[in-house]
Structures are given as structure tokens and as C-alpha cells.
Length: 141
Image (cartoon, rainbow, N blue to C red):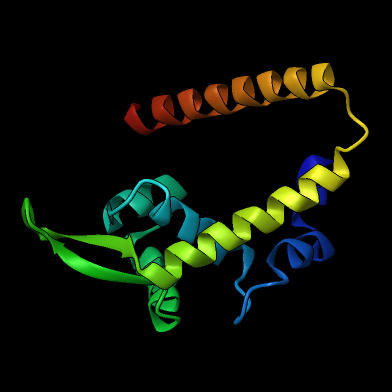
């Protein structure tokens, strides 16, 4: 049910509506993964998204064409490529997060502080469980 709600086009549109040009949900998600932690290796992005490096290169190129990210050689390893958000990319990511926050605030406005705290705890536990499972899967075999 939650996955269906979050992937509905009207929900995505309301969260990305004030961006120009509009980003796809995947582009916005990827931009956040680049902008929040700072420069990140292209190979790490591919591993995180569980896609082939060539697929990630295509996704990063879309963001490059919009001048939201740029690639540079990793100074610690000349074979690796780092991807970093441009100033415009960081601003776009902040704008998208603010818009999403307004959508969530409106959605949850009737929830008590206790309900919100419990939901945040359960969501954090779910993320931790999924990330732990993912880490275990990536080291297996």
C-alpha cells in the first residue's frame, strides 16, 4: 500500500511540481544521494541502486545535461570517477526536500506528537533492517 501511494504519479508530481525542468522521481532520488553526502563514486552509486555501472552512467548523464551534477576523477584513485552536485543541483535538491516536507506535513497534520514519534521510530527500524539485509546480501556469495 505504501509503495503504491509513494509511486503514484500525482504524489510524485506534487513533490516535484515546483522544479523546472521537472525531474523524474528517479532523478530526484539520485540527486539527493549525490547532494547529501557530497562527492560519491559512480561505482558506489551503481552498487547502492543495485544497477550496472553503465545504467548509472546513463542516469548521471541526465543530471549532467541539466547541469545539476558533474563528474571528476577521484584524486585518490585515477581509475574512479566522483560525482558531485553543482550549486544548482544542491539548490534543486533542497527545493525538492522542502516541497516534500510540505506534502508530508499536510498529510500528517492530524497526527499527535506521540504518533509521529512512534512512526519515525518504526520507519528508522525498517530502514535499518533493510540496509542490514542489503549489506548481508552484498557480501554473500
